[in-house]
Length: 431
Image 1 (spheres, one colour):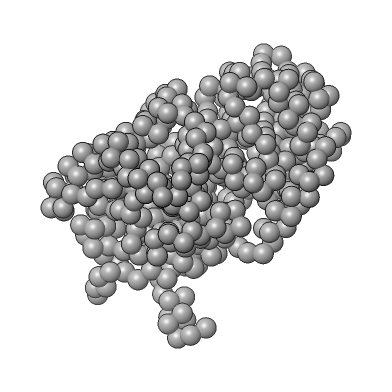
Image 2 (image 1 turned 180 degrees about the vertical axis):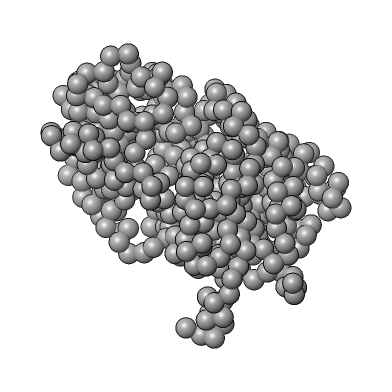
């Protein structure tokens, strides 16, 4: 270790982490925050009130960013899950959080702090620019970083790789002109002008990536660092925090898992509150397959009133503990759920709805570990047929084993912490 590294490892640092979204968005920040605390640093994590207990149990200082009612309002907005309307809702949410996030940074960070914000925490970029504070951006999924090389599969399933290479720049220019800038620039630039900063355009092209460090929380084998990524982009790998530090599998569930063949697990995502059809068809698929099933949801009202004895409801279970006991996972394609299934080496059937989910599903299909199914086509018969094909495929089995073995090669949370610790405060002052 060189002298500069030794000095850095011995210095106490102050971190303000900011995460906007559901459990899958907050979990990585909790995992990184816990590791930074273990390294002797001060860490505060700003998130919605709904995550106060989770963050407190993890031993982190909590800063409230919005109340529980706001979180529940987003959850119950059906447009959030629509492939075309969903991204618009999320961009509106970014606008609504600009000032609250900005104020949190102003009130809780000093010039010696390092501010680490999620993709949606754009108010942090404004505050850090205004105060000359060092900051990093964390993106959880490849679709968040624009590239003209391997193009993403967009919400709705449009494969933008079909756009000819010479047209890809025009494609992104159009996306900026007609989608991103009209949705984000008015509110963002109103705040910037108010605090004495110049307006910006083509936000998604470069601006929302923090210039000192932009961290992608996926491994290079999942989606390689593209040649046209901004120079400050680094990949750390999947963080895989799942609350297993304070939540374990219920003993009755453990006993049930040991009693028979490996079940099929089903989850439409922690934030999905419209899962009635999903779970009805999940039970039907289990019946058709003559397989046991586990339905994962905190929303009991969405379950069929009578479950067969071969199907169990589990409100929550750490995927790292549960999935090794399962034969397959049927889910929405959120990056957190996807990465846990990859580590467990189980086949995946992905029903993407919006946002990054279509792209994550496409990547998993390229890896050979998954198949996908549309929301409209999600019936018990089709789900059973696709699961049966996955479970009988030797190629899929081999691909899952190969992918799972890759998780033994690194410690992504340590890598993320190393990269974040390497950030130097922009203005070092004596206290």
